[in-house]
Image (cartoon, each protein chain N blue to C red):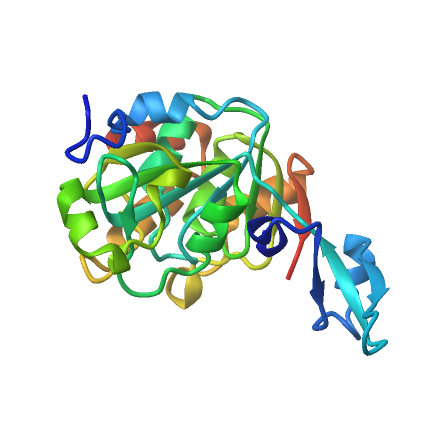
Amino acid sequence: MQAASLGIPFQPIRGLHGTDVATAGGFAIVRDPYSGEEVYAIPRIRPDWAVLHVHEADDQGNARIYGSPGYDLVMAEAAARVILTAERIIPGEECAAHPELTKVPGLFVTAVVRLPGGASPCACMPDYDVDPAGIASYLDSAASEAGLRAYLERVNP
Amino acid sequence: MKSPQGIGPSKLTALADAGRLIPDGASVTFGGVLLNRAPAAFVRELARQRRRGLRLVKPSPAYDLDLLSAAGCLAEAAIGITTFEARFGQSRHFRRQVERGTLKVREHS
């Protein structure tokens, strides 16, 4: 996805030497035309969609993520289209007043869903931490098809 | 409805309508890392809508991968690591689908 986010066909990687991951993945080796160094060429992955849960977004999809953005910014650039779910919808004027806080530009975004608590039972720090009872409830429920169906009705959205 | 700056129409969408944007068979990646900031409610909506044949791509999924596996929504997963972390252990429902051969996995660690 890093390659797709940069609009290039593959990403050179060196960390796979000495492992079976390259063989299993069918990754080819290419030679650096400048130094002659050999690296693995990982083909780009361009997902059709990225779905990101963010802290704040305006109605154009300009999004703020507090704390670590993880891989979200690469995902937003790599995917063909992006859907945001957001803890809070903020006025566009606020994004315009503090553009340095925008992590995902609305240009990339197709749809924005207002969804407070949308990461739960996972964490959305600093708003809320992992909900241990919620995780345990999911793991127990999903053991059977009927249990999972009941869970999806109970935990909605 | 125009946004305050008049840039374009509002992109605000209801959850069910946003879920329907993703068709059966699409490749999709989800934000967040392991148990942090996964779009969990959106993932539940995809499962409720009985999406089928999705191809999930994510370096470190957990709840999202596990739930969509259990719900039979996935045809394939390209992942690096998956775990519910020390407190909850393995992605057990994902593992069950892989062991049954109903889900193809490509490892990208």
